[in-house]
Image: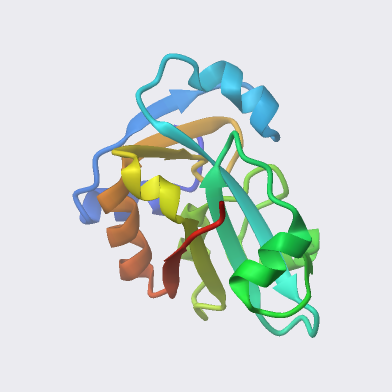
Length: 163
């Protein structure tokens, strides 16, 4: 299976079942949608930000069909001015490259430096899909299992209304 072996070990340890989809590299939502077609899951967009000072990092997860204006997001998150984090920060915090951003990267965030914001509309989904730390596969898991995974990893999170 493509992705971080430690991720699959942790999912097994936590008894989290998943559906595995292997596909060619899918670094954007538009490309990934081709491989998700017909799957019973809400596909997610994952955006990695840093605050203006660069001392706080955020992962924002929303419905893949929604676009988010960064200025609107700043107002909703109430974390000050935000910018997209660099490739170096992404690798240092989540251990992934651009196009592979995922909450599964929390397995690499031993400092719990990344705070997670989840769009409240995702609470209505039964299953969610994410890359397993590489964009040549996707995993579909139950929403409750995602939360259990995040809590196990120790990262803070909250549900927030983004629309």
